Amino acid sequence: MLFPEGVAIDGKTGAVTPETGRYVKRLSELKGIYQDQAAFQRAVSDGNDPVAYEVIDYRNKESDLSFGTTIMAPGQVGGEYFMTRGHYHERPECGEAYYTQSGEGLLLLESRDGEVRTVEMKPGICAFIPPDWAHRSINTGKEKLVFVWFCATDAGHDYGEILTKGMRKIVVERDGRYAVIDNPAYTKASA
Ligand SMILES: [Fe+2]
Image (cartoon, rainbow, N blue to C red; front, side, top):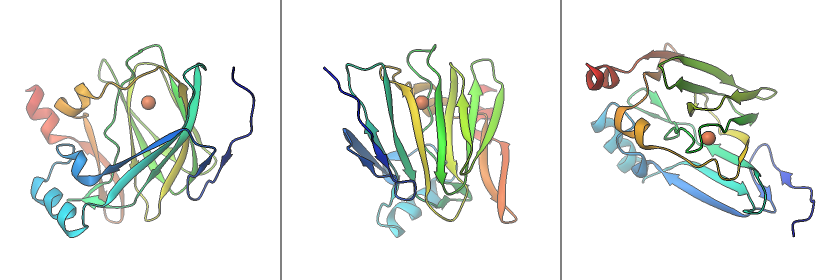
C-alpha cells in the first residue's frame, strides 16, 4: 500500500528527496543524434565524456502517476546544443508536463503527421506535451536546465523513430541565441 508524502525537489540541483531511481546519460551514449560526427568525437574526448543529462525519479509501479526531474548540462556539439534523445510514448494516449525550475531551454515537439512546435522552457512555464507528440528538450542556456516532469508511470519510451530518422528540425546557436532550422539529415533520409 502506498502512503501520501511530500517530496522535496530542489529547483537548482534537481535533487528529489526521497528518490526511487536515477540514470545518467553521458555524451558518448548519444552517438548519432548530432549532425557533426567529428565535433561529436571531439566533445566526447576533450570533455572526458561529460554527463549530458541526468534523470531522477519518484516512481512507484502501483501508482499510475510518476514525476521526477531532468538536469541537463549546458554545452554544444558542432553548434547544436546539448539535447535529450527525444521520444514518443509507447502508450500514445499519454501526455506529459515539463515544469521548468531553473535555466533556459527549448522543448522541440513533432506530431506523427509532421507538425513541429517549440515551447520555451524557463522558470514559471509549465509546458504541456499532448499525447502522441515526440518531444526533445534542449539546453539553450549557459547554466544547467532543471525541470520537473509529470507522466503516467507506464507511458513508456519509444526512441526508435527519432533515433533512426531524427527530428525535422534542429536547434543551433546563431549570433549568440538559438535558431530552429531544418535538419539536413532528416531531409536526406526522407528524400
Ligand atoms: Fe516523455
